[in-house]
Length: 185
Image (tube, rainbow, N blue to C red; front, side, top):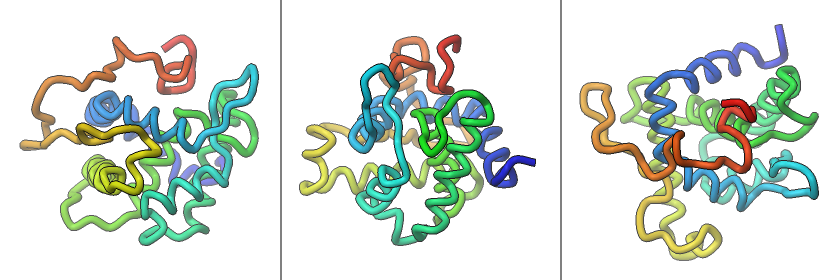
C-alpha cells in the first residue's frame, strides 16, 4: 500500500465522478489562475508546485485557519508521491492534476455545516476560495474579478444547474496537458 493511500484513493475516485468532472470543468479557468499564481515554471518543464507553494496558497486563502500546516504538508507529499508512483510527477512536486487531488483532500478535512457529502465539501471549499479572492487586497494578484473566481453551480437534488462553464473539457488547454496530467486525455 502506497503512503497516504487511505486518503489519496478516495480522492482519486471522487475526481473521476461525473459531478467532480463537471465542477472542475466549470472552475477550470480560476483553478489555472490560482495554480499559475503560486506555481513555478522552469524552462522545458510544465508548471508545478513545491511545498512552499502549497503553504503560501493555504495561508492566502485562509485554509490554515482550519487545516494546520502538518496535515497540509502530508496532503502535499501524498499527492506528490501518488503522481510520482504513477509516472506523472517529479519527487517533491505536484502538477496541475496533483493540485486538483490536493484540493479534494483539503476539502475533506475542512468543516462545513452545508456540506453533506464529499463533493459538497469541494463545492464549499471553492465557494470559500472565491469569497477570499473577491477581497480588494487579494484580487489584484489573480487579475480583475468581474465574476466568481471559481463559479460553483447551485445544486438541486444532487444535480448541478445551468450550462457548462467556459473552461469545459472540450475547449480548454490545461497548461499543455489534460487535467489528469496526461497528454492523451
